[in-house]
Image (cartoon, rainbow, N blue to C red; front, side, top):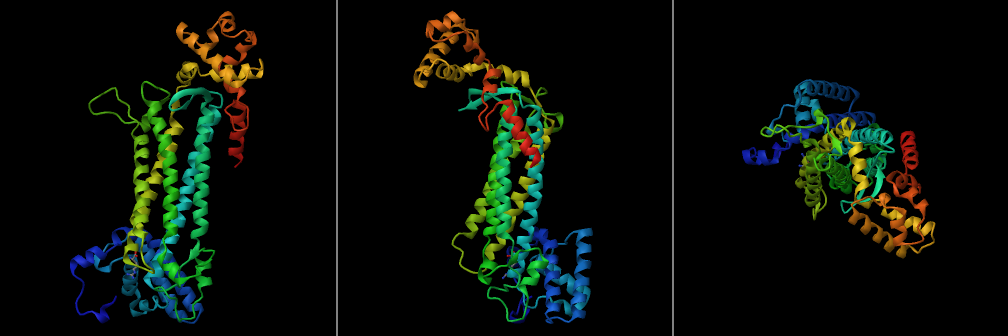
Length: 453
Ligand code: ARG
């Protein structure tokens, strides 16, 4: 490739450290698409003859068929995917293959390929997130009025519905999709034609290649186009955020599936056994989703460090941009799919959740609110009165609603028998009708919106 100026070939260690084919072979489709667009444009501009361009295009088509059928055979001496394609093209059509690289550099080539790859990755992830959302919405509708304890500090706080809890994740994933969409919109500019860094003297048409590759426009600055990887980092940041959301859901599945909780039974398909303890049913998939979030954020930090302080324009450090992106994509993709499968088949133990929701005097706030609303007590005083009621109930070993009216009136004379209508957990959740609240009607409203979206 650069033999003209060199007497000997690279040391074998040099070839080894330089080689990226083991991972950048994943760009072969994008590389061939970029070359096609480039060759077409060169012919249209009269930079290549039509015959030469046609020979190149036929050759590229055959290479695509070969790679599709057999994969890319790695050769360290050929460094990267761009040289693998060019080398094979030369084998197939002879020296005319060398005309393809007119008005192009591997620097704009790799930046173009990688943007195309990340764009597709975003589209695939978007589909996988949507699939998980569909499962969450279906389960939320099914459990719009199944009551569970809502937690703060992982202490029982107020009863909520399971549907409401699941829809919280639906909302997080909506924002994740919007972050991916934002990243996609910003990355969709074509580096092709930026050359090594300075542009080219050939009369190329960058608007034509940009359009042919589905980009919105050519990137406006050739130095920026070949040297920045903010699109990849932004993708990794969006992926990290999404994986963090999944890790919280995964953590809840792990806790809920544990025996003391027993809120969920995972299906056989999404559980594993133990080689020594026959009774075990482990939530390994959820644990791995939780674990993968660490690796995905590690990938994000890896590219962050690669980019820090890098002078313009291209440096070979940038070759290290790809492994973290590929790794994060693979890990997030399988996490999303496993999560969807797990939730689709999980059995929620609604009786057990209901029982747990009754524990911990979870309707104490409802008693305080009733004192404010019906008896006109200032909230701080109502809080105090309710605290005394909880203490009495605790001493008697009963629920709040099992206290007698006499016991309650002993605590505060303004309490009357109507208070019992708010003390059950059903009454509690049904009363939370504020927009976005946990009342079953509100949950169904949000389910309806999610479905129409
Ligand atoms: N394999 C290289 C990469 O991924 C392609 C660009 C090489 N450019 C260069 N000037 N050596 O970054």
